[in-house]
Length: 151
Image (cartoon, rainbow, N blue to C red):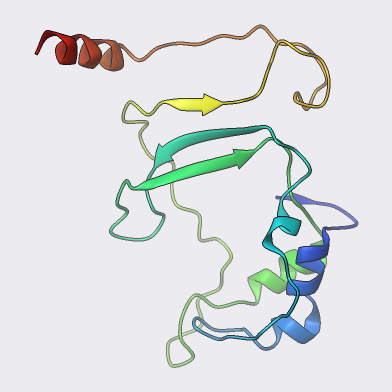
């Protein structure tokens, strides 16, 4: 996410004072009618995807992560509102949602895929410059494919 003066309509509804004060702790609920999850996504059809793990223990490697090619914008007040949320139940010491970043993990031969055309100028490339497309194949992947063909 990126800090900006304005944000999208989804975050405006979800992180306003009336809503955020009703959902402080884990498992709190508050019904927001006519909220469309697609409104949180940036206006882009370009993305990067890779296989990864869940971010909470036991961190099973069963997730497909999707990174949109444009950021989601939040205001400073919305970031502050998110930091007032707790990761715990009310009976447990308050543990803020901030500073809960999981350390970077080893690649473990993950393959990264994208539908971004780096050879074209324009909206797919955030810096508006054509880039030389470069790929490097994991040697493990090639060896694994050869082993599969030989079996």
